[in-house]
Image (tube, rainbow, N blue to C red; front, side, top):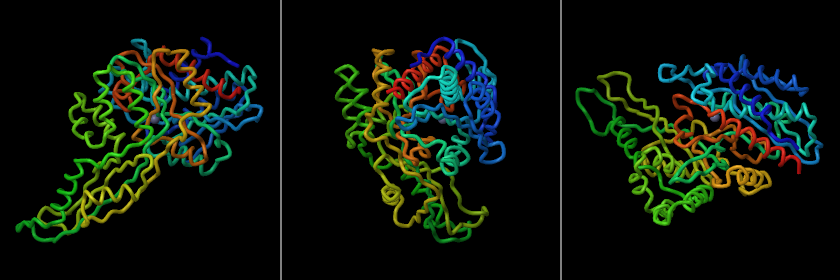
Length: 444
Ligand SMILES: [Zn+2]
């Protein structure tokens, strides 16, 4: 067994800082330097990392700490790319890795160079100490998550599945704390929505712009798009019900009926509108229904010509238990029969079933020891992660990149936001938690 000591935590902090100083903004990604840095660390500890390029400068790094083989492997994975950052909106430059105000600052600090750093620090330590566990521990640092995983986990799972196939995987999506009603909760991501990107096209009578007509494609499109604002019908899912009842159980008795009502589809739209913080309403709304965001709108070429066709691209997201067909039916019911729907790209939702497993139990055990007052809750994210790829190979996915944030610092504000940073204490805490969870789980 191995306990995370100061040296292991120092290593994770140092690695995170060095990763933050490498600009891996995607596009173009350019993850090669970050992959090389981690490969060098892993090799120095006696491991045999491989760097795999899916395209020029798009690199993935994979390493394995061998166990006895008594049980199948566990995968620790993190994407190395980040979303763009506008330096003028930041207090410190986004690729400086500066230490200030008790935090390490930089794009990727919580999404998710922290997890890459913690995982590599752990693997190198296991290797240096020659710790023998029952399971291989695999690390995969991947490219291109932020732009859809094509050159990263998607490519890796298609071309080198034997390197990354595992029974369990720990990646992003949860592991952070939320404060609600004075109570602290830790999220463990066990589900993520699917996506179904659609082009909706409608036709109408073309004509000359000098003689307006209300049956034009543009008017039809505009009214169809406006109807989408009402949203799609809510659906109950197990993970969201468990999440909400976990949160509700810790709130004052006076709030209980209100929180229970959140899981009642009839009351939902009114309740969400009544919430004082609209971002909370949007986040909850996305957990309770399939969603359809109109994003790209196209019609016409010339100011004086009424076009005969108009189209909109719709970013659709599907709940666990819902298929593309279910989504298309709901979308069609809102847009109406005149709209032709074409699926551009889709992937099904991910759900770890059942939630409880030996790994989940280790997560609960470690959280209970370290944060006895906090309540772990299963969690679903509305977006998608590398879970889409690794679960195709059969992994049971837990989004658990542990980090402890001080009161008032919200994960959601920093995730893809300005001033992304990680409290150094929170990163050290995460390193200890990840070490405990992984080594205890793999040792038994
Ligand atoms: Zn991420």
